[in-house]
Length: 174
Image 1 (tube, rainbow, N blue to C red):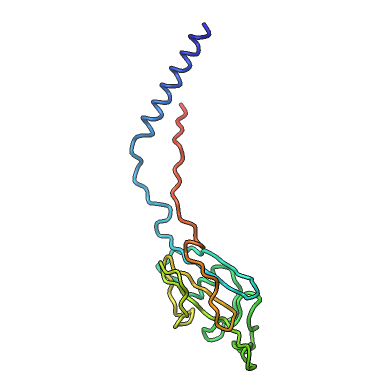
Image 2: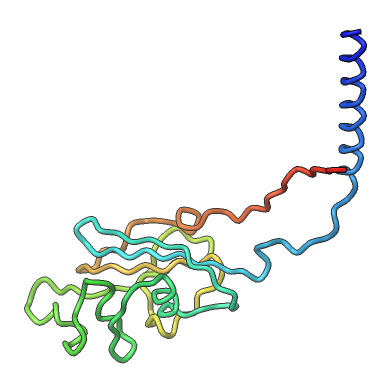
């Protein structure tokens, strides 16, 4: 009797498994991927002395400005006429000249603005200010409080993990 019970159990489980497989094999309805309409840009902020902040910022607009990227990353800013004077706790305070750390002959420290277009892996010193730069999906902005050194070399893939669709197994309860 015990062998017959096991055989029956295996037969029932096999049948249920085949029913589940046949239902799971049906084509899924077309769905918009979760990432549709979502864009991302990377951010690297080098405060000097080994302190580096990185972020991946998502946005739904076609593009955002470099100032938008900093603000959406949650970093407190002090700006003056489009120039970035202070990021977080580093730079020139509100009310001081934006290039307050350049008043003496050396060193001349200020927030230098670097960019990477989508697909690029090297920094380019920005020819425009952060208010005038428009980042699209896959772009990266970098800032360095330095005498001219770019931030650490980090590409978009280093900052923003790939978006993945997650498929969960179909469970049918009857």
